[in-house]
Image (cartoon, rainbow, N blue to C red; front, side, top):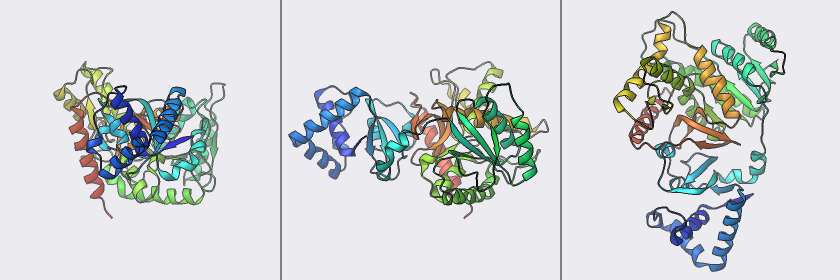
Length: 416
């Protein structure tokens, strides 16, 4: 396991920049004096420089992972960097945009405290044990999807709800869903057993606005009550020794993730929000209804106000993208106009499908910490490391920044 300091990897890049084998900008002049001094001192030490170059080249050639210890607090932990900007720890919107300063190798960014447990971290593999907290409409539907689609990814699904009859009902019925092959077994769990798991999926919702509500964004009113329950469960989980992922499906996904990191003191790499999957599914459906669908359609941001829909990353149309964004944000209400609460598509598109893709190390839609806010986008979760799906669309930058500002304002303006 090879772990480097920031100045060592930057010294390697600077050497390759100077000899013309790596096309990146001249970054040395923009560094703080302390960092540039450390790099220059290393490059002036011939023996140390040759040892570094030899070690780096050997690892890159062998395809072995490189690790760099982060020096800034405001950067996502356990992140896979592939650009100069990421190694310089530039966060926020830039993490989702293609860069001209792309590297020909990847670096796993870690915090100092992670250095001693990296071997253990990289060994974590499927199948996983997964626990669901809350068996309401979303939780119950999510459970169905996980049982049917979770083959080879999940070895057991544990379920908990304060309503013991509901818990028993789902234990009986879902285990009776079968095609004759081995599907993940569903197990009833008490509060003592539910935390003995790899993944905690939080689907509890104390308040769901009734059909016919006139609220502009029904998700925001849920934050205060849901966050308190989530924090209580997280406290119990940590006391029980839980070390796995917190997957948040309850609304508002993005703010709950932020609060779990902020007040719950859970490391950001252990937190994922699952709300964007249904927003992209809705955007794709609406685009098909209008006859303007493109496979290059993309979505970014929260499950609700602040969403960004891009009609196509290849043929971007700002006006059409704005229209699709508006229609997608309000699709929740189009379902409510039928007299029913919309929970099937969220439970399956944001929940079961996206969660299983995440655990299977496939690109999926989820919310992760970008150093400023929890931002939804396509990304891959590789052995607890985040690898974002990047797009080459400069027009996206101001939209992402606007969403960041909105999420920050909403979170900072919450009740204390």
